[in-house]
Image (cartoon, rainbow, N blue to C red; front, top):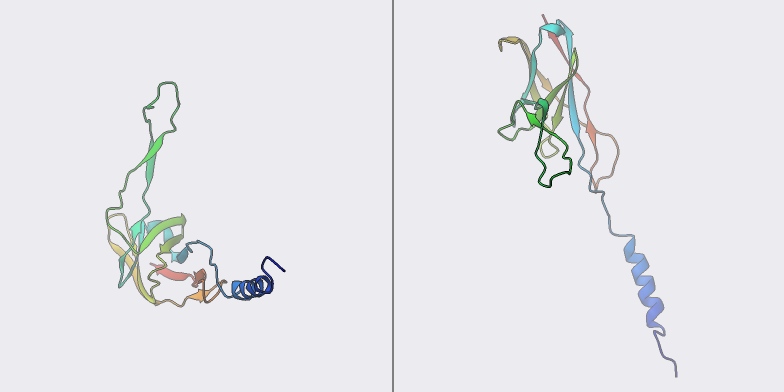
Length: 162
């Protein structure tokens, strides 16, 4: 008399191996999509660049000031200082803008809402609009798969500032 799995074991193994390839496991990665704006001509006059869509307008990336010392809960144990934001972000926004060079700004875009149309404004220090332009955005997938999604990119926007 035979004991054990008999013919059932090989059948279960074959069923397991054939169905294992059917599931898709996606990496837990949040892709950052960036809209780049390049300023032509008078880049030094631009204090802030604003990017707007039907989702709202951008906020400048918070600027972190000098570190503020934090007291240790346990005496003798050093604690690293924590920076304090100077410009608090008070409301959720679809775009966060950062000046990367004198003539280039980068706006991170939330993956949940990639805009297809944006308005770009160059602002002076007194908030005067130096230049404004509307742009259609065309997103292109960089890599990845249909099941898992992929990072996307768009060509830079060029804004001429008089």
